[in-house]
Length: 324
Image (cartoon, rainbow, N blue to C red):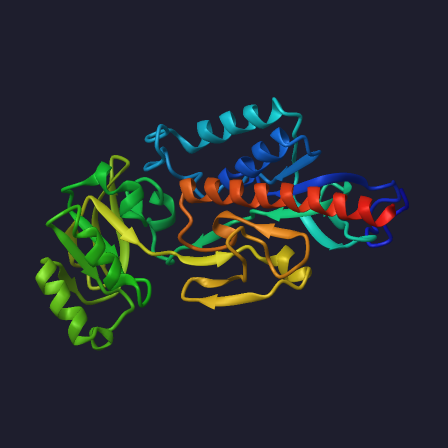
């Protein structure tokens, strides 16, 4: 094995894996499980910053409904370890083309590794409105997804904090879990609401309140209301908000992956298995799209892994045939 000139931090020979998985959430662990069971030398690089960390539970995952995200990930780590998958607590800070088809990966801790194939499952970050109380309560009684949390807060006094063009849609959606919904327009003007918006909001029984939100009212460690800048207050037990999605696509951009623009940010162009436009690079979970819930992320990781297994087997067979 020759020294990889693309990695400047370490003079040691880079370790080579069949597959490196960047990201240790549901997508990355699911992929690693399949890869380990397929007898491929696999490394998972996990920075330990899952998107759903603020949530006490996750929902809608058959047989795992109500499980805490932390417990789910711990069980996943135990499972991949049974098949010899290595997991390192670190962050991938750079990627580049190595020799041949190899992809060079540099870790923050200084370790240099190489992979025949790469799966990026770095997800996205939620950028919340700068309203006092929102970040502090996020994942508890400030929520973003009725499918994730609607049942647990059903029939509550819902508020929806407008944070962009999709806030009307969010208010209409959450009305399926409560008949008491108030849309706080915050920085959105009433003129921005279309006639269709107003008709649908009225039909759903959603009350529309103009004016900027100053803060959330919290008493005894629970959300009790919304206070406007003019001092008026509205009793609410739950506030829904649609965070701005910030896809973590830095590694794929360094490799030259083609991205597509969406209302939720720019994501890699992929085929049905998660293969990007960069040879040898796949993605899964929220790294490939905004709407990937835990169950979708796990499924996407599985699909990417099976595609990679087939790709590596065929690549090795073609090389063997060519060498005869």
